[in-house]
Length: 497
Image (tube, one colour):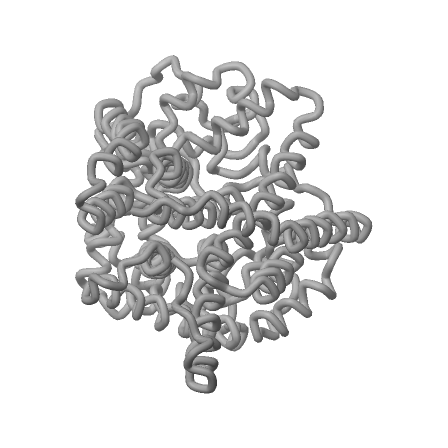
């Protein structure tokens, strides 16, 4: 790890003022235009999404409810509860303001990341401007769900990783690992072992700075491990979410023909859970299938329905019910591998559909329907219907051909950077490490999410889109540099660290 020159850093900062001001103006003006067009922050999700604790409990029993939350990591519900407590009457405005700030942070962070990867100012500014005014970015920014905060944290983590490797400062390393911790404590797909993997990679890559890396990583690691240990002690599950069973059931058990699934359940090859639609259930449906759960006196575990009406998915009955779904899914995967592969292929189809193709976003899609359609057509290469009727997979013809090409190019380039990192010690710069990090995360999300669930895979993909933008910008930068090197060998310089 090397320290950057203060003088050179000052010159760079001054030279970036105009692009940053322009991007800030584009961001602010575009949000004003979209607001005028009718886009409004959708906080109605607070009342009915299964991932959320009852709003009454968020206001009155927040800490205890978070402690006994087993369906999700606790961080996003902590955010919801904190806002509801601080702004009991104007919470919608507070949520909207938070997400606008996140959007601005994403704008600046993505631009800074592209510049650190060596992309030219015009390329960086253009790529960021296109991304922040795209319909998916606007729609996710106005949707009270964890997808957008995860997007920002993932992009920011790459930026601070580059700074940490480049400058070697403990503060940058702590922010990088803290952002990884935020991801683990927000989305269950980012696992304890995912966190540990990047710690080990950096320790092996920079063995001389291993103490500094461990010092930066230890506090988030302890917090993450504490959550896993707490869930194991309280619920008997070493995990941040007990929803693996229903997710696996969707992509395996419920891919069986209905008649065959029912026959397998009646012959006891599958449990009775195979007759209960995952995520569309109530605790009473499982009473004949799992041992009765006595009341605990803890509302977040005892509630059958939340005060707003929908079922309480955190009811303690669902811990055992999730195991039934998981065991059924594993049986189907072993016994009917073609059925599971059908589910996985369907997941990849949805993964490469426009991120805006979801009925969950319909309220704001209708406000900018033409813009959403144009973005789907020209950015993704998809003729997707603007507002899907249900948040479920649709036809393969709506896959984005430009999107598939972009991911293929980005991953091919990124895998090349991973190969350089492994095989060429002389090329282990901050740039190469960061590009490998971007590639590995895109691959991780794509493989893991499409192996475990089907239905909203395009939403799962969205947080990786800024990472793909960064990989493509770096790929274009290298291609231009090689082309200039052939024409003017003396003018071509090495890529930025």
